[in-house]
Length: 326
Image (cartoon, rainbow, N blue to C red; front, side, top):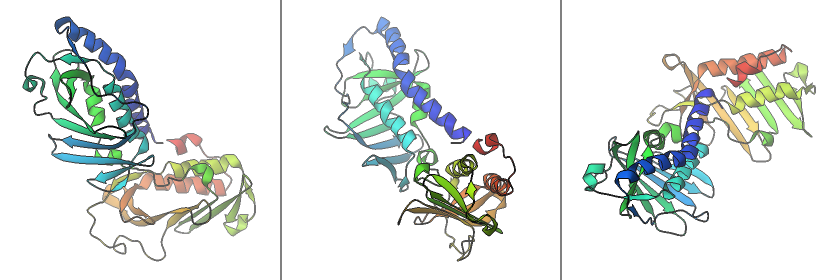
């Protein structure tokens, strides 16, 4: 995982874990002036699986729908695409935390809390119970917090402003951005065809062996070197999705013979990434995953780093693990 994505995940899950303690502090402050609590109706049992999340951002006039299909999250709107499991699970976990918070009685009209016409509405479809809607309103004068309430309840609660920001993920951040998604332990064969370079390795009883180049055919590749290659593949990410692309695959440089990386994990199970033309103004290449229609950009520097790694390993040079992992 690259540094940027690590930071996003760290912030999101820190918020999920830390929100409860922070809310308790805010609630104690609020109870000094508002001693009455309101019974809560919304809570999520372990058996209640969140199967859909809909996010309506009235400020941006946007709608995002995420669906859980047998444990796999996918974006349903505004585009259909596999979702980033970790980030969406973070959203679902946050909803569970919110369901546990004590509710406070409103002393004013909901307009004063920004909840009559909330900036954001989040709908949760849950197994075993009716759908619930979370309203996110105005900033609270008490601490750095935001007013929230479940639409079916009479009380409100507070969340940190940072938690609100974490909930409002972009469509890009919610999409699955890994180029290769099979687990590393499933890899059985890896093939790389890039320009004049052709590399191929095959796993046999836990060890990896060269198939290409021919000069190395049948030779065993040290596991620590092969692990560098596998880690580099796992850390190739999509830089930008081109959902509005109108050009043909040929116009983008995807011909019958072109650069590609293929990973095989057993009979009929494989992932193939195809390289297209260079996009200099974006410092990227066009790319697409076989079996998917969407075209995207992949970072040019990461491609060069990967090629440098393969050449270094082929020639037996020592290569920096830190550079590959960055």
